Image (cartoon, rainbow over all chains, first blue to last red; front, side):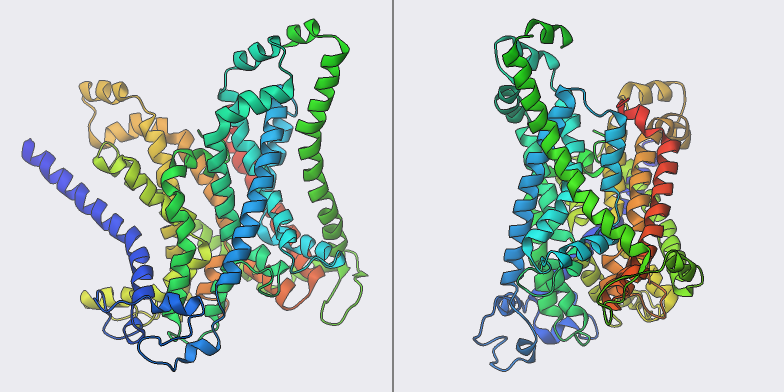
Length: 292
Length: 304
């Protein structure tokens, strides 16, 4: 009996390790490629592991003009643009869009709950907005912003992302507000607190952890979005980080993969920094409040 | 709540309620409606027009001609087919793998916070970086072919042949979204009371029977939600084929979003692109309505 159990768990362990390997290897490979020297990147046979690592790929992305890999001449310099403006745009757009979405979303969630507004019609409407395919969003907004002369403007991206982030924040926050016992706000009402007081003094402090997670997830949504950003922008005045990554699409096989991977690793940073925090809220976040 | 309102029936309170309603419901709802009305106007106008950005100054009304053209557009239908194939296989594999992972990791030290945080990473990674990463992995001299060589299998031209290119897109999607299903199912599993399992074990249920008659029925709600959300999201796939294969080779990975994007923003035929986008939207809505009906989502949330 004992032997049988042992062999079962060994089998389980092997299966688990294989799956873990499958999910971790691509990240390992991205990080490793970003640190490799150019000749190791596409060499055959494959370089699985090497101690010849440098940060020169990252330096190149940030416009470093000194020696790279010990040589002054490097072809890549001629076509690689600096990553900095793209990162600045991404952060600017992400922060503002998420902040506004969180404000509007928490207002709406509170209002819906406090005044019993909407019901299942509103729920379906918000959920259907969350399901909109980006390409359906991009076409009319492109035409609208073109008439308004707002193509290649960071604010137009902030506005478009509201369309996705506000329903998300509202759906999620309604779930959390419902969990707060009604007695708390009723007691405040009796003590002479008005609705604004209830929202700002009682509900928002209780919602703060959920709101931080919603801010982070909205920010990452903006950080990740490619299609709409690509359609509405034309230059690095407004282009975001994913569009920077598409620059590497046209490059001849292997020539700039080191720096491309370095860009990819930079793109992972906000996610790596925030996963521990948001994981508690991720299930409800990903399912738009359908599961808690 | 209603009783309280009556007690406070003086002017001050009802004034406060009205202002509060304007601030908390009016402003956010109005901004959402504005965000939708104007684009919808442009969208409808465009669907019924011919508007080629490369040489036309103004859109020309042509009625339903765009839709008639779509019917005979072979590229459109093949992109629908490609999307279908990729979605079906990707979502099925994701579900099976995610379920296996959730079952394997339950009640082991793997189910803790750290491992869950690790598994969040693929979900949150920008899909465009996943496209880039898998471009490195599936390279002719890349590590995937390197693995194959270790086992004595000939290298595969992953991104250069229609079948393998499609497979690559599916694998990239599976890599990103299996953790999503896994996390939802793990949460579902962890909410099953331990007493149930123990009672079933006392009654002699083991292994597969335990799963079939105890775990699975209790897991169905989470499983359907996970599948529904995943299926709807998968139809929108864009970034990975955009970078990994650019729709090639021979249009084998030209998914719906990618084809619409190319006709609209690369070729500049806005009207035709908008008409295709409308068809995509309608199809997706039908799928969503169908799924919501099947899993009876509304009642589960208790919004009615």
